[in-house]
Image (cartoon, rainbow, N blue to C red; front, side):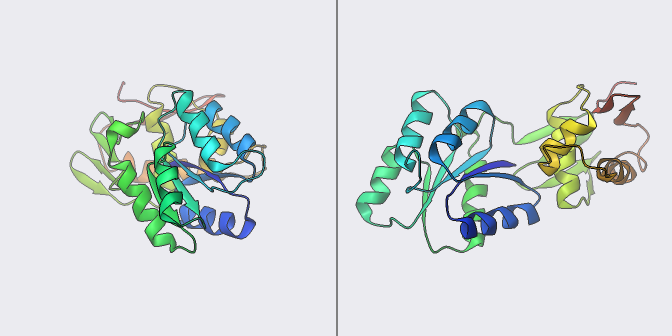
Length: 225
């Protein structure tokens, strides 16, 4: 999943970001409410995690503005404001869940996964398919022709990005941004290495190649010959 965290405490932001990265999710962090709102309006995220007390724009105003603009991405308030009235205000503002600091990352992850099981709250699909290849984004399970494929978290994210863009050619730069959150062109073969690993699991044991290299352009996935 792609997650936006709007949190001005650097320790909390780092803790959350690291935890989601270990689970194979891509997390973007912004410390300012106004900047966070602009980012949430401009990009598509599966879940937003928002503090109540933020510089620039407070969390309640953030979510009010987001909902007024028609954005339905699930929002979890993550905040030290834990009174009953605080929780009611957060949910009434348009939040979908409310978690009080201090918190355990395992609980935050469980709440994110619970929101992901509510397809009516999301624009994104929870099951992706390309031919006989299927990815369950909630169960984090990949199968092909009924066979379970064991993929590592970063491989899962790479395959998810490819499958969400079935039939489109994605450049190396696009994959670096969407999978590794690199907004520059590092001198690394990380994309090529992970594509090779995916092919060894997704394509080679089966009769038909799905992941294809488009010469001088990038990579795509489709079930066409």
